[in-house]
Image 1 (cartoon, rainbow, N blue to C red):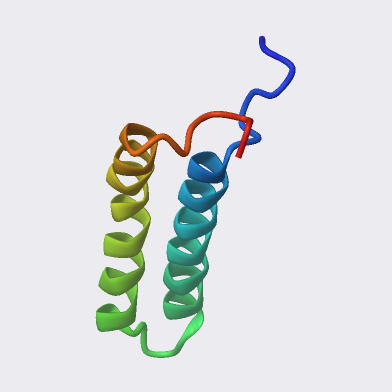
Image 2: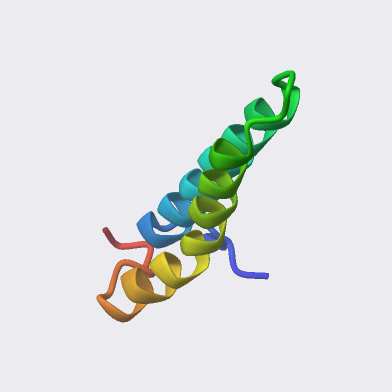
Length: 66
């Protein structure tokens, strides 16, 4: 594995957005009754993280020299 593996702006942004989605979904599941709208928003945010990473990679933010 490369020394800078995962230490790029694209990777950090993708992971941060995915983590936000998981946190939103978790908070929704902790509510009584379960907040289905917030749960689906969290799921959508988490799923958007991967295409966001791909777009940022294509734009050149996937290199360690940034």
